[in-house]
Length: 66
Length: 147
Image (cartoon, rainbow over all chains, first blue to last red; front, side, top):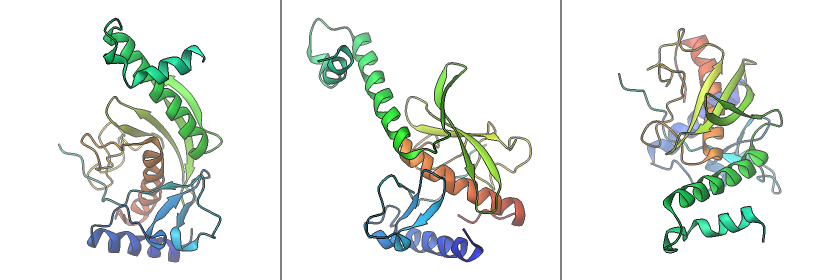
């Protein structure tokens, strides 16, 4: 994943969080991980892709208390 | 019907049978989860993932490489209420600011979705652990966690 893709991912996550869309219905807004550990943005997937991909819940990570 | 299949089938309504003990219900529930998790792990985790039992905790150890090329070993398990992921390698417990990079002092990733920092499913925990690994690689280079 290039720096540009990281920036794109960061922007996508921020945008979805702003609208409270942490598990978006639209595929183009979804983000997945494949079994090889690669992050895949929904917009980049081909028509037949999607099986064996795990969707990322886009809520913010939390900071532990204490 | 096999014995295991019978137990799983009975799991949902086990407390409806007056002669069946609560222990049997707990066993059936655990067995159901173990079978479901095994299937989920086969489908979504890296091929190199290994099912291990460590200090009585059963879970999967798997490698992740971030986009920056950093390598991680993560351990995913169910803690009784949610799926947790612990960073096994690198040693983050003593090096990172836990608040800034979403880690408990023990090295558990604080996902923030469920109470206690876990995730509701194995797939969701795996997916978010990969996002965390990529975020941590950026954090190590910039001091800022990007996600």
